[in-house]
Length: 214
Image 1 (cartoon, rainbow, N blue to C red):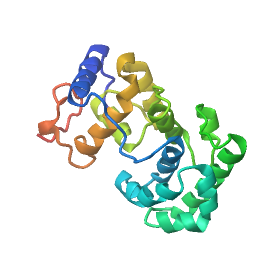
Image 2: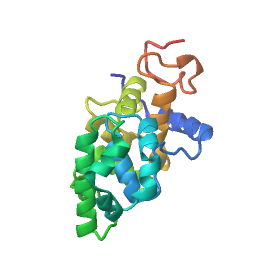
Image 3: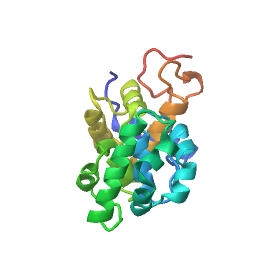
């Protein structure tokens, strides 16, 4: 685990991220808050590309909790069976759809507690929805962010909760809204797990990682 970087270094890192990609976006396809919740719930232990492929036709016919309930669990499975853990995920999607339909009038709640109370929705999923749909500066820490935070010194922590707190505590407010997208994209395309592309990394001179692949 790298040492926590100082304020000025972190500000310079995110200034560079912002210059390279001013409006970073999540890569899960969705058409509204409900389909975003479903897509993120399906994405656990699966790639965004794999989820997008499975939901392309699904969201044309089931883009509300009510329509998903009409489709039914077996109908949903037909669309998502290429995704890992699809039976368990289908069960959770049906349960959360029923709760949204019956308790929230088909709307997706905008509080973390209410989102986390939905079946199959953990803190990371809730934070993605809060950030991407409700524009809250919530930080969803996935494997990419955990790796980048610890390697670089941007947000070191022993677990995802510690990394989440480090992001909130140490990254300047002006970058909080897009911070998790910049970090995810950096981890996905540059600071890769096995062979990080350090030679072409735009923050390599500021990064604490000692085993740079140059």
